[in-house]
Amino acid sequence: MEIKDPILEIKDVCVSYTRDTMAVKHVNAAIKKNEITAIMGPSGCGKSTLLRAINRMHELYKGIRVDGEILLSKHDILKMDAIQVRRNIGMVFQRPNPFPTMSIAENVMAGYSLNGIHVSKSRKNEIIEKNLRSVGLWDEVKDSLNKRGTFLSGGQQQRLCIARALALKPELLLMDEPTSALDPIATNRIEDLMEDLKKEVTIMIVTHNMSQAKRIAAYSMFMYLGELVEYDDTEIMFSHAKDQRTREYLIGKFG
Image (cartoon, rainbow, N blue to C red; front, side, top):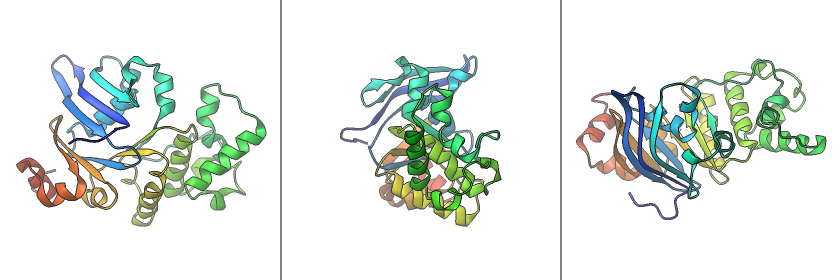
């Protein structure tokens, strides 16, 4: 599928865990700026593996190899400093993971403190309030900023993690099944939040929930056995999928 002026270009990307095991196979895709793109597919198809390659997370583990090109705003992130890449590309995981020894305020500022970025107290307060407001959490926690983030509910913790990821002003936000551990009310809130956030940041979300992809994603990718089988406008994919495997997945024949 052709995307004009994409913010992210994935070019012939392969991810290998061993010489004999390729988890992602020659994926090519261009991602539209300020939209939500969903990555769907059955367990073990390479969705999360591809997402983590975009964030350079595989380098935290020995023996994983990433080949190809991943261009963020025309810059190949595989040739950039990994820490800088992770500042430009935020990541939110399946289960909320606020740093347990940090307060709510410290969690928001974690990207700064862990990277040795010093800001004034007034600027720090601005960053904390702005990002907690951006995830709809400020009014709920403004009187408890010094309490640990782990004291919050699951949905609140996930919004705190999103605020933490947004604090460094990334160009791209990656979300790996961010609502799978949440109840329906918290899930709806996160989905509404994503709709608001796409005005400021491009979002890619891995999801097993086809209804969720249909609700929030402008574009959808379907992966199977490490391959990108189909990539299209979400409405077109759900109504007129081109590949038989995509059609069977969407009607629940496997996955």
